[in-house]
Amino acid sequence: MDYRTIPELEDYFDDVIETRRSEKLKVLLDYLREVSELIENNRLSTTDPEYIAYLDRYCSQSKHVSRIHRDDLLELLTPERATSSPMDLGDPPMGPFRREVVFGAFYMLIRVSLDGTADFFTLRQYLTEFEREFSDRPMYQYLRSEVYLRGFKTDHYRTAISSVDSIIDDSCTNPRFYSNFAQGVAYFYYSGPTESLNIDTLPNERSEVLSVAEAYSQKAVTLSPDDSEFHAIRSEILELMDDFETAEKEINRALELHPEEEDSDAGDAYNYYKQLNSLRETRRNAERADRALEEAKSELEEFKSSTEELENELKKRMERFRNQTLRSIGFFAGLIAVVVTSAQAILSTLSVAEASRVSLVLTGGLVVAFSGLGVVLSEESNDWVRLLVVAILGILLIGVGLLTPQLVNGTLSILN
Image (cartoon, rainbow, N blue to C red):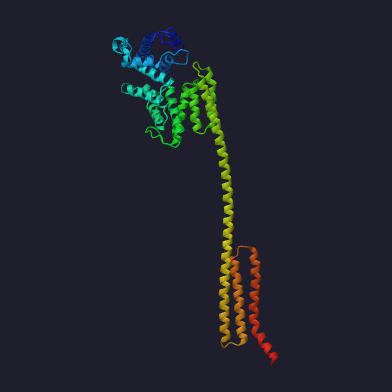
């Protein structure tokens, strides 16, 4: 059997667009048998991008006439919905590839429902009905991630991430697996920026999770560089990482590729332009926030500098006050000592001349000692000049004191 290319499929289905529904189901079963034979002969794998492309192409609704309807697939998969001529899924009419055919029909059911108007809860019900039979398949987990990406809670996006993470390994070559992981991370942090991921196989830190998503988005783009959707999803991850310049390049690349894609949709282009405008607005807001932060830092530095100046000035004033206090205490202590000593000298048996000498010498010594203490405690050179004058005055007092007896005795002799 020939391995039809995707463009050839369109010609293959052109002849059955106007057939009755039962005839469409017969054609669908024949097609799924073909795909199953390719899988059986190891010419196609259910994890290959080509497998997804084959099934997506069949149920594509981008053309003026849809290839297959959800009701057609439900009629095929659900016995109670069967018509008067039901399409039996037993081995005789299905052949040896029954399980692959059923899974192919299940995949198409989910894909058509995603492209149509089915709500999240209906999609989740479809997953639940076939979970026991197909949950061990990587493609089932991929579909599960697709469904939960249509959810509206952070828990839904967490489930989408966990589902696709379970099927990504070193041998994975399907860009959609990597892209779905990145998209789930983007949705998760857009809906709950501060929440923890809480998936055992992944780190909890936001920056680390984004690094994994960025690496996976890069793998998706590398494996399929001409898919605009992968570039758009990568742009979302880069925006969350504040790499606005690269994010804008990626979304612009998506816009460049979109018109060239065979099944391009105007709605996708609108979403890309909307994403680009949102990115630019976020970038402007971030730049304004950065400028405000820099201004705040500058003001804080100025405030810190002025505070340090005030602190230094306060220290100087406190030091000066301490020195002045010590000087005053020393001066008054010495003064009291001089007064007491002088009084004792006067009241003792000393003569007037001797008492005067003692008082003047003590006072002069006190003045000299006080000026010496001032020199030790002083921090300014101007104080030293004043203290030197005081010291000279003290020395003069000492000198006068020493000469007082002679002066008193001479005066008394003159008077006598």
